[in-house]
Image 1 (cartoon, rainbow over the protein chains, first blue to last red):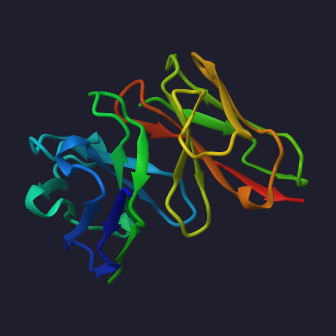
Image 2: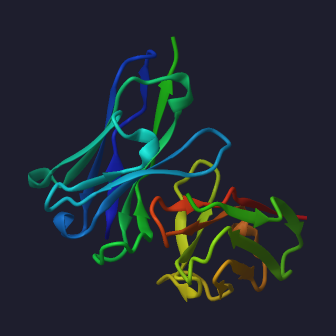
Length: 122
Length: 107
């Protein structure tokens, strides 16, 4: 069965960086894009960007340009999200989510990781 | 970015009731609209994609309809396990954006 398992909770000080991992299993990792979506406590869902695990190509939401980096290691079926210059407003649960189809431009999230809480506090 | 609105923001209904949530986009998104269910402390779960297609394994009491700018999501007979927040999401134009959510609970 398809599973996305994320790394554990992180605490960082303002200005620091954080790297969250998302390990995929149960399907061919390089065949489906991975997206990252975050959710502040009690708030809505915010898409951060996508990554093609085969090519490594990425696309980021304008809001996060310059602060976000999405990478992958196909040999261990793992995707990574790195967010730098953290501020308190970045405190949120970060989810990885797989695209349902391999068709470019079709953004339907059919499997999600369990979420990783990132807390930014001095 | 395309703005998505949902109504109501919350509702309370009895077990067995028919529940309908609406989602509106501020521009035409054809049928590129998905619905997710999120239970407290859990990741969202895909229920409906492309406005009306039921995801595999999702109970048939869930349905969706609409096109253009106006969409609806219906639970035909509310069950206790349906207590959750429901989000719509468009993908007509990047970035994909979500509605603010509708919290559903049992009266």
